[in-house]
Amino acid sequence: MNAISEIGAELKEEFEMFDDPMDKYEYIIELGKSLPAMDEALKTDDRLVKGCQSKVWLDASYKDGLVKYTADSNTVITKGIIAILVRLLSNQKPETIVAEDLNILKEIDLRNHLSSQRSNGLTSMINQMKQYANVFCKLQQ
Image 1 (cartoon, helix red, strand yellow):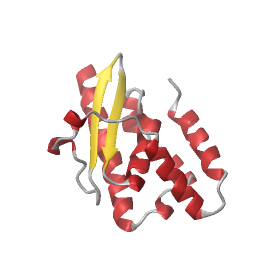
Image 2 (cartoon, rainbow, N blue to C red):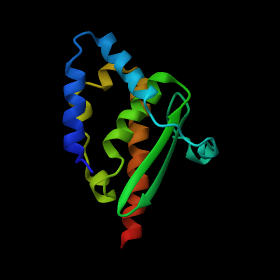
Image 3 (tube, helix red, strand yellow):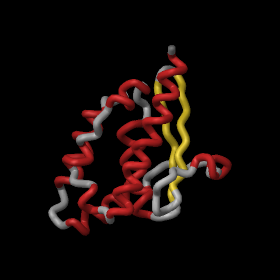
Image 4 (cartoon, rainbow, N blue to C red):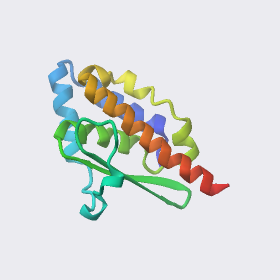
């Protein structure tokens, strides 16, 4: 298990390779293509992230004290965004996820590459991931 800060440092290094904003945009799309496939049976309305322009399905499981996320989207850029979040937050302790401020998203300047609607969707995705983690925190008590 890598710490969120370590994963964030890797992402920052990857994004620093690109000077052109369009190259960063393309990289986000590539990250989406590398997102592991989500079981079609999990793509249900109750797993849709509300507040996203595109359809984003998000599911979480809890095993051995760690949260694992699976996700998918019907658009390539949004799939890339959720892939970044899954990479950062999967396989972490729920209390770590709840407390995480995700400053790395500012450091890689992610929101500046998104429309305002997609930026709102990013916030919704983060909130949903933290809600799942919060539920798992309560299960530990």
